[in-house]
Length: 155
Image (cartoon, rainbow, N blue to C red):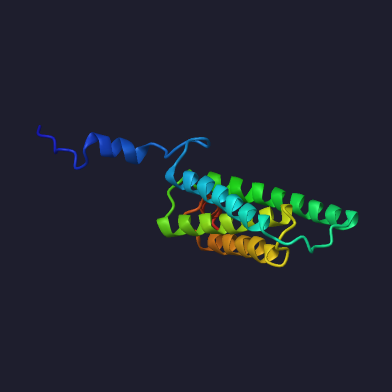
């Protein structure tokens, strides 16, 4: 009996069947996330080096800003961990770019708070980046969170 040839070469079939990567494996999106966050830290640090020292740096104010910066850092660690996990699956290039830009804006805002510089612009960067991140999550139809809700019949 004659067998039909396989329409896909063996290498292409193996690529489609294997999972993309593990949690620690670097992907293009994960490397872009790390590079974007590192660039945001460098840019915010550079911007805060020229800031004037006119900000009231009393002990109570410094304690409040330090606690705020710590709280923002914890939020960013959680958000970047979620992004790192999400980038283990297939993501459209536009969505990945949006995620990286949102994370970079939030990291820049938190860095400005850590440096106690440009405190008028820092909340807009941090909160704007997180809001943009949340809006992208709502638009991400291929995310693991949507597939889990579909399996329960909610989506």
